[in-house]
Image (cartoon, rainbow, N blue to C red; front, side, top):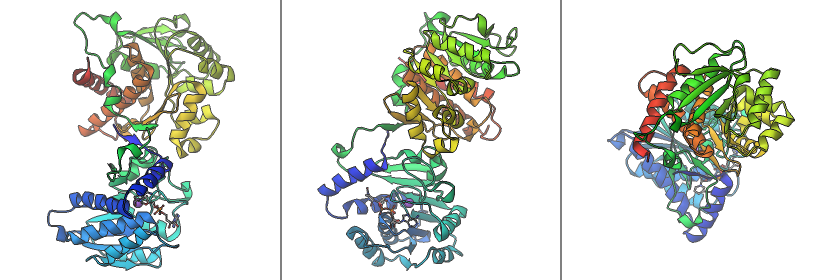
Length: 507
Ligand SMILES: NC(=O)C1=CN([C@@H]2O[C@H](COP(=O)(O)OP(=O)(O)OC[C@H]3O[C@@H](n4cnc5c(N)ncnc54)[C@H](O)[C@@H]3O)[C@@H](O)[C@H]2O)[C@@H](O)CC1
Ligand SMILES: [K+]
């Protein structure tokens, strides 16, 4: 299980660890960890490798100087672009510079980033090591440094970022400085002391590449209990069940998907088909508009009028294609009034955002409740813009979970699952194939199916996000995407993933 630590927590751990260690030990270990990872990526004949190391003005640059010295001693052709500190450097950074100067690396101390850009051109680099900025970046990367970052981003070689890709906020995964800033895109990130939330959500996944945490051998007792983790089968596998020979459809619960205003019947159908294929025993598709007689492609579904359905008799997935009409709002109020566990998605979330009484009703429910907003729906619920949500996804998910007393699944790259007590889990399965119409309906149906089969709310949300992403990952690995995958195709892949989970972990 991978804990995720904020920059403030990392700084505290680092400070405590430094008291127990000789001066400079942590920077030396960070540099060694970076070099180990780099050597794994270099060709067998190390002397053929041309490695460009960007060493910025702070301690991230110190790590880079250590890495560069190791790689040069290992025989690689190393060029260091060194940006000297603008204020008195830490002693360990000076020591790192000394080691780099005394290594076979070619060290170019640059007065400006523009000189760095010129020095990069004309060489076919095997690998770039990014030690420009780490967790100390206080403002947007602009001007000459931005041009340097853009130049690296156009190279086609592997790029290892030390600690964090320069320009990325390690807490949030946003670009430091927003639109005014930029960030370097790495293929690998060796991150020090502990893994960090920003490497896995928002812009994180596109900039960090493969994340390799390195604890720098810091004593375990210096790490606080993690309030954030990466999603992992170990967090929910205990809820998986194998089917008993003696089970029947009544053993696996009922799901009612409520939505489908006129002209929007597809969304509840997708959610309902997913619920059925993810193992729910009985699945109803309840329409705010006129219900179809049946679903020709999935005749096992029972199509009903929402007005005539007893909301106390199934797990409720409310919102797909429901629209914002008065009858939609009425259905939502009676669903919230029921004792049934609920999953709220799409239009149900928009209706809640626009109604104080619905918010109060939701916050006061005692039955399980999962909300699955995308950033714009989360923004409406929080009274802010989608950009503000994306600027700090972990904080937005936490605020929503606490405000509405529900488990929140904030969708997007690096889906953030938040509990009422502020615990968060960031999902790291999934890929851009999921950015397609109907994928959200599929997720809500999947969460409903897990609740119907007896999963607790928290584990249902974790497993829902994980299985949904895993289904997309399998389809992409089979060559079916990410371009052009449709939500319907996810459904059989989810069924396969649910069955694999039950076979491997079910009791
Ligand atoms: N604190 C720790 O826990 C450890 C830190 N280490 C390394 O040290 C890093 C943190 O070091 P620092 O706090 O020195 O910070 P950084 O090296 O991340 O960056 C700070 C430096 O960049 C300059 N700067 C900030 N924003 C700028 C901008 N927009 N344009 C130009 N210059 C800018 C600052 O003046 C300062 O010189 C970590 O990311 C990690 O790589 C490691 O050595 C191991 C231990
Ligand atoms: K970096």
